[in-house]
Structure formats: C-alpha cells, structure tokens
Image 1: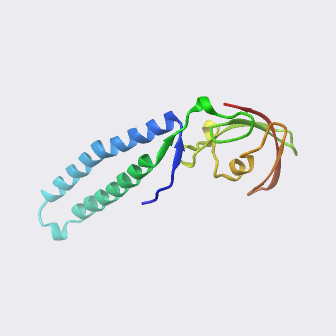
Image 2: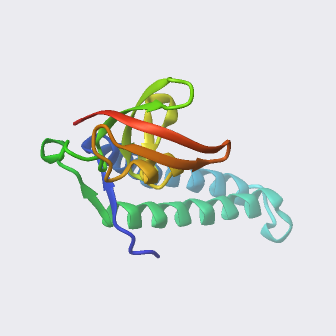
Image 3: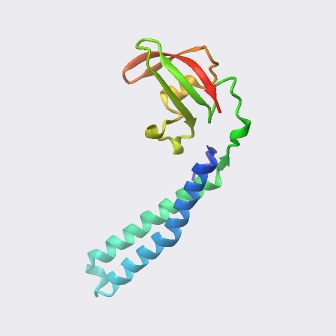
Length: 158
C-alpha cells in the first residue's frame, strides 16, 4: 500500500473513519450472510452465487485495506492555524475570472475531500494547483480543459 500522507479537516477524517467502521461491521456481516446462504444451496463447485459472494468479499477486504491505509496516513489539519496571507490547503479563496468578471469562492481541500457542489476543490486540481501560494490581488494563469484562464485572487479567509 502507499504511504502517501493526506490532510483532512476534522469533518472529512470523521467521515472516512465512519465509512471504514461501517464496512468492517455491516459490510462484512452482509457478505458473510450471502456466503452462508449460497453455501446452503448445495454443490459449491457449480454455485455461481457462492463464487459471486466470494468475489464480493475479496473486493470488500481490498477496500477495507485501502481505507485503513488512508486513515493510517491521514493528518488532521487545524483550521485555526491557517495562514490567510496566501492561498494554502483549507483556505477559503474568492477568485474573479478576469475575462468575464465572474466570481466564485472555493475551499481548497485534499483530493479525497473534494466536492465541487459543496465548493470544495482539490489542491491537486488545475485550479487548486494554480492558486496555491498566491496572495490577495495576485493573478493566476491556469490551464483548464477549456483553455488558459486568468483568475484574480480577491479574498482569502480561513
């Protein structure tokens, strides 16, 4: 497994831990029940239901291992210690598109917590990468799938 350190808000880390706990308890219990039901149907060598349940068990265990790795390498970010003089992870940044004047506010988060509908973009996304380290009033030229766009950082907060 990877040893990549990921940074999370308290909310994001709690969500990850809850999902892992759910998979370990309810997920494993559901798979065990499916295997038992399939086993009760007779000859295992010709039992497609049994094979499918065993495959599902393998996928579940792989997902649990991956999530345990994520939680083990997770670091909690203290939202009170955010430097608002420049854009960094957990910064709430308001940017203005220099071409059309549209403004939008994003919170920069880890890849695993990104949720565009909630206004959270990854620091690994093109816009997130382009904004990191910028100060209020600075301009960022960012290559997006729609072409290069210039954004002005109009506000940074925690």
